[in-house]
Image 1 (cartoon, rainbow, N blue to C red):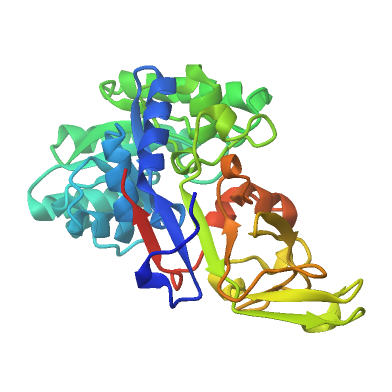
Image 2 (cartoon, rainbow, N blue to C red):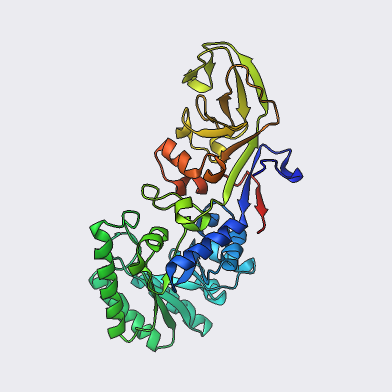
Length: 385
């Protein structure tokens, strides 16, 4: 694929190219794998750095029937942008504007008595029902109600449902080890989930949509598909199980490319210390190039002497420390690279480019962190299908 940026960003230090067709295609593949379960595409954290509204639109075009975001403000922003699809949000604090959420027709997650009380109060104020999904803690020990707390939440929700203040439309939970499908907690969590669903049925709330599977479980665990699957990372073409399968092996295509250009090329002598702290020294007379992106743009500082960058068809490694706004590359003796030449920081494996997973491997983290940390100061350029 051509790395030439469009004219609108030629004067910038770099940009992020998002392939909306890849997002739509990835959702189609996830829907195929889900075998009849609906797809809730997770577009939280600005769609993992890809842009919430464009990514949501592409996911819906690819067959998603639901969307999910973590924070209430994210959900309200999508509604304001014109997204009308069913939309679940699950993180809000006491005092949140639940009146606005109900007015916007959002589905709200409820994990504790205080949140149910807050939703009921807002629904009473508006004289309408609020749509809620009850969250059960099946073993992640994060969000959700646990044990007797779940039983109490079910009883209170059933009363609020009978009183006409809420409509309980969903029940959900989250895996701790979905990326290790043989781990015993996976089956154990499903058993807890099934028991929680059964308890809902006994309380008269059996007509609900069940959802448990994230990206990894969608791709590896058909028994966890239930009524809705909730893929996030896989929507953007990244493997949630990199130790087991690559993106291409899963039928996914990376949607994000991070591109820049060399802004300086110069000859330096052997033994020259490069960047802060001189953690890299040139082995011989060589030519170095300056890439105008750094940790303020989202490149991990941990990628010092480790991050992979493609220049002129060659995969090089960051030379020295990642700085706030720039990194240096040792282009090699006699290199013919010139100012203005394109570089690929993050791209697609099928094109031989460094991927978000490559950056994760180089820095001891996960691809989720790599893509979500790409700064908003890099303009997004969207490629339509």
